[in-house]
Amino acid sequence: MIGLEKDGGLWTVTLDRADKANALTEDMLARLCDIAETAQDARALILTGAGKVFSAGADLEAARAGLATSPSWERLSSAIAQLPGLTIAALNGTVAGGAMGMVLACDLRLAVPSAKAFYPVMKLGFLPQPSDPGRLAALVGPARAKMILMAGQKIDAETALSWGLFDRIVPADTLAAEARALAADTLGADPGIAAGIKAMCRPASPPTPSTP
Image (tube, rainbow, N blue to C red; front, top):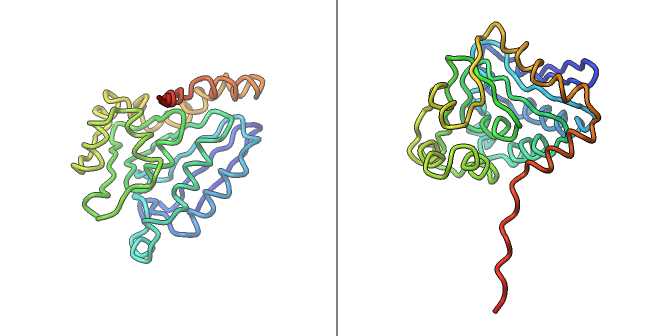
């Protein structure tokens, strides 16, 4: 239910459980973690889904068994964030819940016009994964991050674009091609250049307060 296609240095990972809104089981999440942790040789990685929903987050039965708060979500997003190549989330539809983490960890986010984003942790009664709020706030600002995480707002594609959560809205029939086109320069360059640019784009750490 997790597809992996390798075309030279381009890896395309597809969530393929369309009949269940690509809700992730424990095995699917583990497979995603394994792929992300072994993708160091990928010059670019595209993350997408089958059907009309990117992912509804954790599978309902698995969530009730504890998957919703599993540390594997953080393991996955951390592995994606640490990849040296360009990472692109090509959202074929709505992204919800824990699935937001892997999307926030990507370098770029494309979405179809019908896509929405929401992360209802407050309503469900648990904290988001540790890195997700910081990554979300870095994209949309602290107040808008709280709109999503604390006020439970479901953000449509146009709003997500204007807030900086999505980088581009594209038609569904050109989503895959658009993602590949964005990866083209990175695929054709020295991998060290891509890794160097990513390192230079990371936010600088705040200065450590001096001791009187």
